[in-house]
Length: 361
Image (cartoon, rainbow, N blue to C red; front, side, top):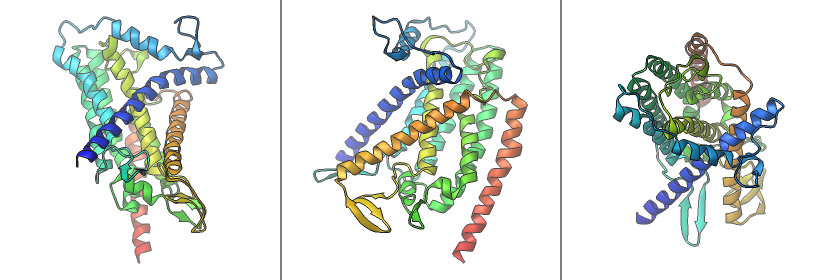
């Protein structure tokens, strides 16, 4: 029991450390990718010594700047809630990664370590529960600022996030019916099957429509373009209008953490997580037979690498969308969520249920 608690704590620390560093690197990646798409140079230096490192010091410079900026609280704002709001958003976004599996089982000597900080039987429910708490930080930020524009931004954010959370949950119900479990690790193991000997049984193969709806609703949950109505810099109604310094940085950082979380969920639910086609626990299998035995450590590191590459791909893909599509109007955003994505997700769920019942007969 003690060994399990220690390993879970260590894995949680490793996971959060990697997420925080990837989120910081995300700011540089977004600058470089947007510059590439717009045919310009982008971040290429940070004026720290003679070395530029292709602008990789920009995230460090941003962090230093935010830490030393004045922490402004509106004179008539609620000081406690104003300070608490960014912590609520960031903490609940980070602790969702506790249930995220990034590998199968690592065997060192006679000890087995599950490569998942917390192997919860209701892992997907835990993630959705923690994500639903993030909205409180956004609403409290708008309310505690004592600013009508910030309050309007908070209302927009809560309406958007609650609306798309409904669809976000419905898009994966079909997968849960197919996998027959709420445990994320078991979902990944189920996707290790092969159809006709060469087609992986990944979620995107089983539920292609649900995958597209999942991406549409998930990007809305991150509050980034084309769904960045809660911020809307051009309209000056962002829920963090009255925030400065590192408090603003925490809201800014949370958006990147949520983007990484969405990439992880898309990988786990629809793209086999750490699964590699034809690679099983003892080596490479073809047509149900072992054709090449591999060391266990090599298999474990290959699985971790597979999960990492898939997550990085989705991070890149979300940035591609962010710099391609324009911002929706508020009425367009709500109409898309309630009149298009929600009915389609319900129809997909109904069709999935009918097909499963027919297959059982």
